[in-house]
Each structure stands twice: as structure tokens, then as C-alpha cells.
Length: 352
Image 1 (spheres, rainbow, N blue to C red):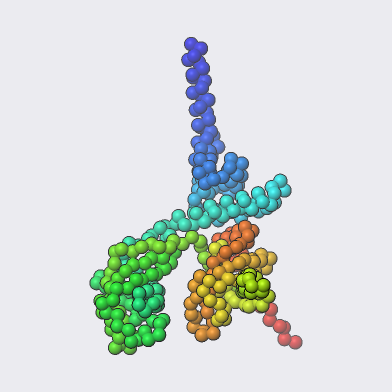
Image 2 (cartoon, one colour; image 1 turned 90 degrees about the horizontal axis):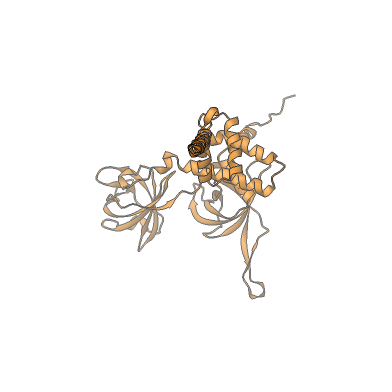
């Protein structure tokens, strides 16, 4: 009889624990919330903090804070403010917690359907798609998709190398690379069916391919910007027979036209070459300054012959700068709108 009572008591206790973790009287889904939090790498203390944030923001489904971009954007602002205001946390602990939250936001972003729609064959390509064409003998060319139909891909005649107008492409096998927005880079091999060079706009007809290789997946979210930047090239000293790098004191000016925590695109005067390194210095808000070491990974032309577009990857960037860029990219504090509003606030002199 005593054994039966003990077993019954244990069953009741387990039932109460399970009931509490699954919401219980207060309807909070403890079990789902804590298990998802642990899966995302948060400590029990951090999960309790997130639980308070979810409750204070009155989320209908609190555990959605771990995967919903909408719910995360709603909760990140008060969460980060509370973290920064906590006098019991060290600066390092604050940055680590904020970094975890922003990594969660980034993961939720790339789980959105628009980033999951990869393509399997060239029939899914769209007009105006930029193509990089590599030919074993003549080198690299640039072209654009004009039309995609059931039988072939119509593209502009490739350009970018000396004497490109005179090249005979019909029958050639070529390798093509293209970047699909919000997705990844793809490459494939194809054959030129026909070249029409006598028209006003020379065109080429390519065979379709169902062997696309997904060669580069997007790893960071970029946003369009208009940020003035100073940069200082890394130069090399040959003093004492060495080849020691140092940052030049000569300042150059450019404009950052898109930005992520891993790199940016900047337009500036001609002069920098592929793999050139530089110190970048710019403000994303009035008080948030970014200083980083970058390297040029690609150079492209602009409509102005005097200006080039430089694609830059960040080689060294501090955790505070990285998190500040992510807050700007996801617009957690509305900083992008604030910057635009300040630009519009032009003071007009009053006529006397």
C-alpha cells in the first residue's frame, strides 16, 4: 500500500512539472520555450531574460521569438536597451548577449522563403540578369540576359576584352557565372548555338542547362546606403631590405553604396586594384563610427569613367562595430530613417 502511495505521489509531481512546463495556469509554453532556447545556444539565465521580454511584449506565441523576424524586430529594441542598462553585466557579457540576439535575427532572416528558393536549371533565369562569361582562350567577359524561352537563352554579345566585336562564338563551349539576388551564385557550362552580330544589337543564343552548381551562398544581409567614407591604402615599405606593410597617411574619399557586417560596395576614383587593402573609416549614424581593415575582391565600372565600384570584404572588424552594423542593417532602432530625415531637414534662410 505504501509503495502504491509513493508511486502515485511521484506521478502527480511529474504531472505538475509537465503541466507547468507546458504552460499550466499561466498558459506560458515553458517546455517549448526553454527547449528551443537551449537549441539556439542560450543559457538558462538568458532564456529567462528572453521569456521576460516575450511576456512584456505580449507575444501570442512566445517561442516565436526564436524564429520569427517580425517578433524579433518587435522584441530586440527593448531587449538591447535592458541589456545596456544592466549595471551587473560586464561590457564583454553585454556584447556577447547582443551578439547572440543578432545572430538569432540573422538566422531567422535566412530561413525566410525568399532565401530558400534555389533554382535547378537555366529555365528559371530572368531577363536583365548579369552574366560573367569565362572562355578558356580569350578570358572573362560580361553579358546580360535578354530573353529566356523553352529552346534557348538569348544574351547580349559578350564584351570586356579587346577585339570582342570580331570574336566568333558559334559552337564554342563557355562557362557562365551569375549571382541571383537574395539567393546565391551559380555556374554552368553551355554551348553557343548561334551568334547574330550583324544586327544593331548583337545577340547570342545559348543552350539550356540543368546542371547548375550553387557555388556561393549569401552569408550576410546587405542594405543600400549613401555613406561618406574615408580610406587609407595599405602600402609597403622596402626600408632595410624588407617589405613591411603600413597604412598610408594619405586620405582618399569614397561613398559606400551598400553595407553588411562582412563587407561593402564603395564607389571612388580609379586607382585601387584587385586584392588591395585599406583602412576604412565612416559613420553609420551621428555617433556610431566604424573603423575596419578591408580588401578589394572585385572592381567594376560605373557610368562615370573616372569612378570605379569596389567590392570590399572586411578582414578585421571589432565586435562592437559588427553589432552596430547589424543593428543598422536590420534597422532595429530606426537609424536608417533617422539619417534620411536629417538629410531632408535643410534649413532655408528667411528673407529679410
